[in-house]
Length: 398
Image (cartoon, rainbow, N blue to C red):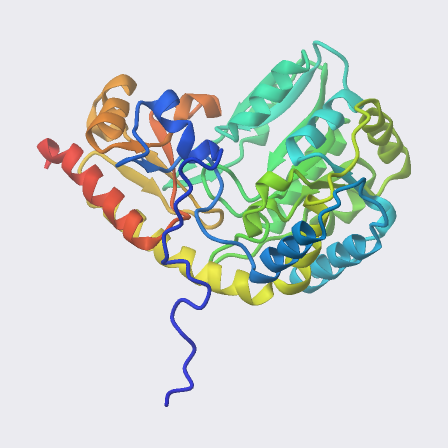
């Protein structure tokens, strides 16, 4: 008998039917994209079609069997699990006083925006970037200051000189995506120090959204902003969560790590205005995932690496399409400009022809006009089918 571990120990290859489960990714794609969940492929919402860590499921089953769902209290095991994970996986010693638990990270970003800026003032984004940043800045009545990145040999680079020249003086914060969504860049320590230094020079708060920090694929290494530029900790906020890592987004539990007491007090005061407290399931799931999830995550990264290769190589083989190689996350950012088509045409070919729902590039800001974002965190057979459908939808270009 062989002692070799199974190729798929956590069942990532096994399809899970999410239809009819109040799942945004599956149950809303007909309305939003005209793609039927019966034969369509959802590659838009950034969650995974994989079951989470077995111990998380077992713990929730025990909670349900208990039958009482009161207010959440005594977060000591949750704090310890967060500290243990950050130390073990990122070499980061977290002081528990730094952590502000929020009802999801987007809500946390909103608290930060309101804590350090006034209506009408500027919030800087390096675009194209995560569409929810644009929405939450606008919803808070702040001005979105876009700093388009440069795409150099299929890899995004920051343009800090161009940004400096474009500043008007009312900018208050940089919201930075690390690793980058949708382009999949994993930023180097030098790049992070450069952004932190820029913020110090221009009196800006540096908010580093690191929700994908565990989803760094082979060949890259993530650096925590506070470790890359500790000299600027007085103006740096790191946002992180277990939600993307372990497919727990429905738990709506995020963390803001704020070492500076004065800055933390400002954000905490704004957080208090919402009157929100943690639900009893999100912190519990986070605790179990951070305590028992190492082997699961290690296996996931191997599986995602395989999916990355299948999708990237398949798309690259289609004339007119160009996929940016993702160093992190589980998203592929695909450029359709080589087709010579307007956005309406190539989008229709993807949605109507290939029956795939993918995020529209313009929602990510300047530089996203010719792109679509595809989520490849699903069973590999579905990724292979998506490539086949895309090839057929654009077969007249071959």
